[in-house]
Image (cartoon, rainbow, N blue to C red; front, side, top):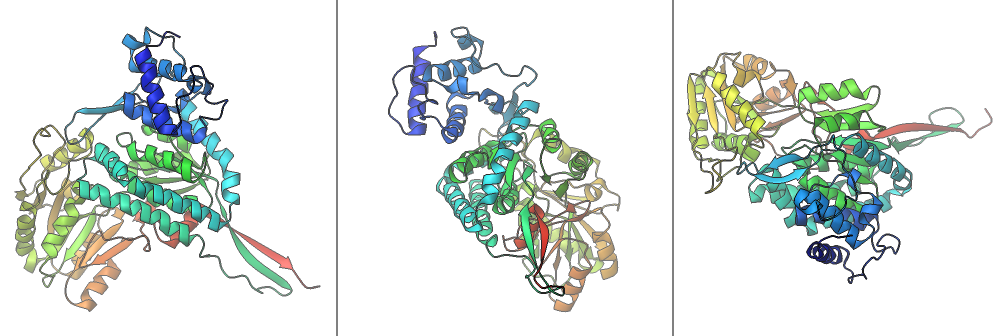
Length: 547
């Protein structure tokens, strides 16, 4: 092959660094000699994407393309474009129907990488590989799966800087937020490594005359996990943690704009868990639809209500777990704690307000309405996009913010200052906003803005406050702020939501369940209750007597 010698040298250096080997002789069969196994294969293509700026799809990963250093160099040259490709014949032809998608950095709006969305071939190949791995993974004793999950968590933690930087690349999150979410991912994996060993089955016993019975919890098989762009790593951990712990294999489809940490998870899972146990197929909505319609056994989806409805229509009779939108209320009583306004604004601007469980609709009584509007406005003025929180994730989300805010008939509007870092003025930065004096059908109230925006409404009493809180289709999370225990607990009980906080908001831990109702979906994330989302019970009854 007439591949440029400089390219061959670069590939050789990268190969040796990734596989930690000495340079093999020219023409060495890397696969036949065992130098490049399935784990090395995955690690190498992730490294190639970074080193050479090319998008590698599952269809590209044919053994012949990677059999020798020279063939890998030819493959890279072909992927890099015509100027280089003219020097060498194509080794692996990419599906011409799949065009590469340009991904941008939300902080700057500039191109950061290109990736080819997974098509029918890529999805089918990943599902087939995952299916092949189910028997061996499910057959492991819980303690053995737990050990591997703990190793997986260790790898995430050991490479936390790489994960945090990958998370920031696609989301624009501040460094502290990204680092915290990496730590949460490792913690969730460790939690489920232990939880699966605790046993949650009903106790065996003598329930029928002359019979003994017990319940086995069995894995579902292959789980298709589809996660959104607002928390690419953490939402993946919420889903893959219990799914893997209970003996399922997973095909993970990240959002189109944020594939980075999902690819790292697949790389490290190949090392810690084994080939095929956790695979990632980057792609767009069509990729997700293909995954749902493929030979999988269940779907776990986190995203929009429209996306959830589409998945349900395609999944048929297979199990589906959905975590959808929030548009969450926060009831603020006249005797709310002094830090209420600052705490609500912090929660509303965390991750630039792109959290399903973030406070969105503040509801007060008439007597503390103006005080609440002023308190929130003052707190919001101290939270600047670019300093305290990051940009919106993508152009579509920025346009959604602009549309809803532009259509709002708010009579009172407080806008916080913007402070994007130098050189990042072209990113998807949007300021924090407090909107008040609103009609009940205002779009900022009825639609989930999913941005650093708080609306404020007034009610004549507790009953009307609850009616306003429960007036939207979503029922994911809510909070109540007040000093009297009897009042706040009564209001908490009346809120239609899967999770309610009192005098705090958006505080979660692996031990506590999270899930919605109504248009917010169904199913459970986190806690030991999430294990049953990915298992099915089998009752075994044995005749032990003569009757």
